[in-house]
Image (cartoon, rainbow, N blue to C red):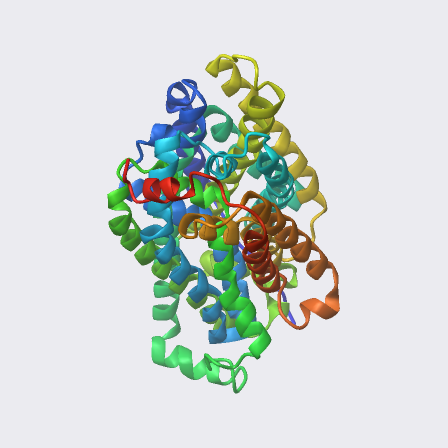
Length: 495
C-alpha cells in the first residue's frame, strides 16, 4: 500500500511561526512577575482567575496525549476509544468542585506552594520525611512525562515539516524551556489559556470540516461499519481494557501540575464555576480527538497509509489534506499547544521539588536565601530537568499514548490516594502517606515492566488501588497529627 505524506507550504509555516512568536512573547512579558519570589514563580501569587485556571488545569492535563494519542487510539480501536476520556472527565469535575476547594483553602492558610509543602503542613512533618519521599517519584515520573511531550513534538514536526524527529525534539524543547524559564507560573497559566483556545479550535474545526468533506455523519458511520463489525460499537472492548481506560481518571487526583492550578485560584468559592468551564472544555476536546481518529480511519482505511505507518500521525495527515495551509499550520500549532501547556507545567513542578522541597526546606533550611536568588536557581534547575528529559526523548520509541499514561498513572498512584484521604479523613497519618507513595510508585514501575501483568490490566489501576489500601491500613496502625481536627476546619475555610 502507498503511504500518504503530509504536505506543507509557506502558509503553514507562517501560521506555526506566529504561534511560536506569541508564546515567546508571553514569556518575555511575564518575566517581571516571576522574578518577585517563589510564590510568584511557582503559583502566580494565588491571584489566578477562574477562566484561566479552568483552561490551564485541563490543557496541562491533556498534553499531546489527547491530540496525538487519543486520535491514534480511535483510528485503531474505533468508538470504544471513548472510554479513555470518560474517566478523567468525571474525576476532574469532582476534583474542581470538592477536593480542589479544600486544598486551596488549606494551602492558602498555611502558605504552602507545592504539594510536598501541603503534605508537610498537613502531617506536621518537622523532619521533612514526606518531602524526601515525594521528591523521587516527582522527578522520575515528571521527567518521563516531559520527555513524552518532547517526543510528541519531534514526531509532529517530522510528520509536518521537513525536519528529522530529533530536530523536532530539539525545537520543541527550546520553545518550551524558553518561556517556562523566563515567565514561571504566570507565563505557564496564560500560555495554557491561549493554548487551550488553539486546541479547542483545531479539535473542533478539523473533524467538522473533514466530516462535511466526507459527505456527512451518516455516510461516515456507514463507511466505518465496513472496517470491522465492532468498530462503531462502544462496548466492543475487553473488561481489562475497559477498566484500564476508565482507570486513567485515577491519575487526576495525584498529578501535581494539575493540583497546583487549584491552589492558584484567587477565590476558592469560584472553583464550582471553574469546574463547569473545565468540564465543557474537556468534553469538546475529547469529542474532537476521537472524531479525528474515526474520520481518518474512514479516509485512509489502514495504518500502512499513514506517515511512518504510525496511527498517531493521523491528526497531522488529516489536517494537511482537509484544511487550507494556513489553518493546517494552526492545527500543528495546536499540537504544540498541548505539548507546551503540559511540559511547561511539569517542568515547574520538577523544579519546585528540587528548589523548594529539597534545597530551601532541607539543605538550606537554616539559612535566609533571597527570593530572587531562589528564582534564579529555579530557572537553572528547570533547564537541567529539561535537558535530562531531552536525552530520554531522543531515545524514546514508544507510542506517546502509553508513555504519557505510564508517567500520569505513576504520579496518580504515588500521590492521589494520599491527597484524597488527607483532605477528607482526619485519621490519615504521615507514615501511611509514605507507604502510599512507595507502594504506588513501585507497583506502577514493576507492573509496567512485566508484560504478563500488563496484559491483564494497565499498571495505573492496581498501583492506585494498592496505594489507597496501604494508606488506609497503615493509618489504622499509626497515630494521626495532633491538629488533625483543626486542619479539617481549615479545609472548609474556617480560620
